[in-house]
Image (cartoon, rainbow, N blue to C red; front, top):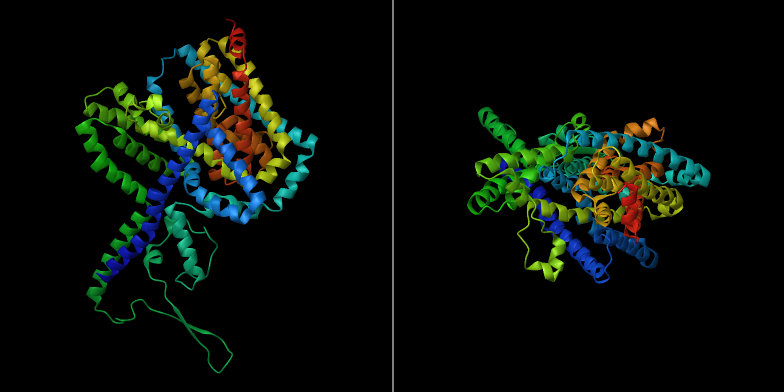
Length: 555
C-alpha cells in the first residue's frame, strides 16, 4: 500500500505542473495573443487596409522585441520571451492540427471532373518540383554572387549556442517523454540510481524504466578514513526498514507495485490523451446526442486523432503526414457518428465549421448574429497564434537575417511575381476553371496571406486552402530528397529556409523548427514566407490587377 501511495504521489507531482501549464497558462496566453491580434485587425479595418492581422502582429511583435533588446538589453527581453513562449511555443509545435479543418471540409467543396482533377494533380506536381529546384539553384547562385557564404560560415561557429538558446523543444516543452528524460538526467547527476551518467536525451521515452522513474533517489552518505583519503559512498536502501520481509508478502507487494508503476507511467506519458478521452465520453457524446451541439464532441475527436497520428512509426510518417492522418480519421468518425445521430455528412460538416471565428468578436456589427462556433472554427482561429509564434525564431536569429537579407528578399519577391503571372494563364489553358486557375497563383503562399490575395483576384478560396496545405505537406515529405537532388548542403540554412518558406509555407517552416531542429533555417523560412506572401497581397491589391489576370486567362 505504501508503494502505491508513493507512486500516486510521484505521479501527481509530475502531472500537476504540466496540467497547470497546459490547461491554464497556455489557454490564457492564446486568448491574450488573439486579443492582441483582434485589436490590430480592428485598426486595419479602420484604415480599410486588406492585410492579415496575424502576419502584421507577428512582424510587430518581432520588431518590438528587437527594439527592446537594443534599448533594455537581451537579458531583460529574455524574460519576456520566456513568457511569450508558453503559448507561442505550444502553437508552433502543434501547428499541424490547425490545418486539419481545410481537409475535413473537402466534401463540401464543389465537385471536380476527372479530367480537371488529373490536370490539377499534374500541374501541382510538375510546378512544385520545378519551382522547388529553381529556387534552390537560384538561392545558391545568389549567395555566391553576393558573398553570403562567408557570412554563413561565421554563423556556424555559434550554431550549438544558438540552437540551445532558441529551440523550444530544448528550452521548454510540454512533451511528457522529454520531461521524463530531464528528470532521469537530474537523478543521474545528483547521485541517483542510474550510473554512469549519460548525456541528456540519450534514452528513448519508450525504453525508460518505470522503476527508474518512480523509485526514490537515494541519498549518499560520505565519510573519510584517516584524514584525506578516498571517499566511501553508501547509497541508502529504500527498503532498509524491512531487510528480510516474508517471501509471499514481498512477491505480492512487488506485483502490485509493478502494475501501479505501469499505470502511472502511462498516465504521465499520455495525460492529454486520457483527458480528451474523458471529454469525449462524458462531455462530447452527451452534449452531442442531447442538444445537438457538436463542438466538444468534434474537438475531442480531432485531438484524439491527432495524438494517434503522432504515435505512428517514423517510417509511416514519411508518407502519412499528421495533417493527412488526423483529417482522414476525423472525417471518418464524423461520418460514422452522423449516421448514428441520423444526420447527413453535409449537416455534420456544416456544424464542424459554422464560420464563426474569433475576429468576429471584435466586430460589433457582426457579434449579435453569430452562430455557435464549431471545432473547425476554434482550430482555424488558433492558426493565427501559430503564425504569430514565428516571431520568436525571427527575433532570436535577427542578426543572421540581417546578414542574408538580399538572398532572402530577392528570390521571394521575384517568385511572387512569377506565381501571379505564370500559373493562371498556364492552368486556364489545360481545362482548369478560371477560379481555380487564379487560386494556383497563391499555391505556395501561407494560408493567412493566400486568402486575401485570392479574394482580391476573385478566385476559389476553398481550393486555395487545399493547395497551400498540400504544398506544405508535400514540401515536408519530399523536401529532403529534392534538396539532395539539388546538392544543397545540410548546413546551408539560408537555402533551406528560403526554398522551404516560399514553397511549403507555414507547415514547412514549422517542420524546420521542430521536425528538423534548425531554428535558423526556420527564421529564414519565416521571412521568405512573409516576403512572398506580402508581395502577392500587395500585387493583387494594385488597381487593375484583377482585370490584368483576367486578361491572362483569355477572358
